[in-house]
Amino acid sequence: MIRAGEASGALETVLFRLAEFLEKQIDLRGKISSAMMYPIVLSVLGAVIVTVLMLGIVPQITSMFADMNADLPWNTKLLIWMSDTMSNYWYLVLLFGGTFVWAARRWRRSASGQLVGDAFLLRLPVVGDLVRKIAVARFTRTLSTLLSSGVQLLQALDITRSLLGNVVLERVIVEARDNIREGEGIAPALKRSGQFPPLVTHMVAVGERSGQLEQMLNDVADTYDRETNSAIAKFTTLLEPLMIVVMGVAVGFVVFSIMQPIMQLTEMAGT
Image (cartoon, rainbow, N blue to C red; front, side, top):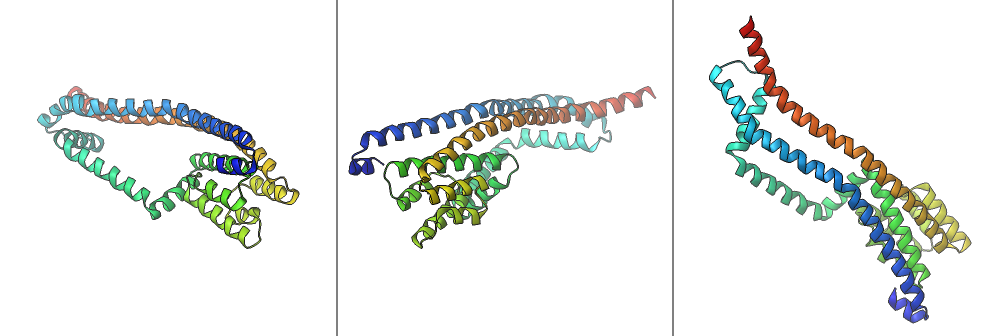
C-alpha cells in the first residue's frame, strides 16, 4: 500500500486509510478477546474444581465403599475408576493429553487439516456464523482500502486472501482472481461458492457495474462490522450459561455418585 501511495503521489491518504483500517482490526480483536475472557475463566475454574474433587475428596469418601464390598451403582464405579486413574496414572494422563494436543495442532497446520478444520468451523451453528462475518468484514474492508489506495485489483485480491484466516474462503478468492484474469467479475465467483452471503455478492456486483466498487465494499464492511459486534454479544450470551451448565453437570455427577450409595446403605441399614 505504501509503495502504491508513493507511486500515485497520495502517500498521506494511503497512510491515513491504513491507520484507520488497522485501528478497526485492533478494535475487533479487543472485542473478541474481552468477550472470551469470562468463558475462559469459567473453564479454568471448573477444571480446577473437578480436579480437586477427583484427587482430594473422592478417594477419601469412596475408600469406605471398597471396605463394605457393596454393589455400587454404575456411575459410582465410573467415578471411582476416573479418580483412581487420575491419582495413580496422572503422568500418563498428562502425557497422553499433551501428545494429543501436539498431534492435533500439527495436523491442523497441515494442508488437509486446515481445509477440514476451516470447513468444520464454517458449518458450526453459532461459531460458523461469527467466523464468516469476521472474514467478510475483513475481506471487504481490506479490499476497499487497497483499491482506494491505488493497488491493482489482482494484487489486492492476493493480499486480501492472505488475511482471511480461512482456507475455504481463501480458495474462493483465488477462484475470483482467476475469473478476473479471464474477463469475469468478482461477484460470480463469490456467488457460485455459496460461502459468501447474498448481500455481499449483490453489493459487489452493483459496485462492479456502477464503477463504485470501493464504496460498496466499504459499506458492506461497515454493515458486517456491526453484525460482527452483535454476533459476538450473542455468542458470549450463549456461551456463559452453557459453561455454567457444563460445570454444574460435572460437579453434580461427582456429588450424586457419592451420595447415591450412601443413601442406599442408609436405607438398607434402616430396613
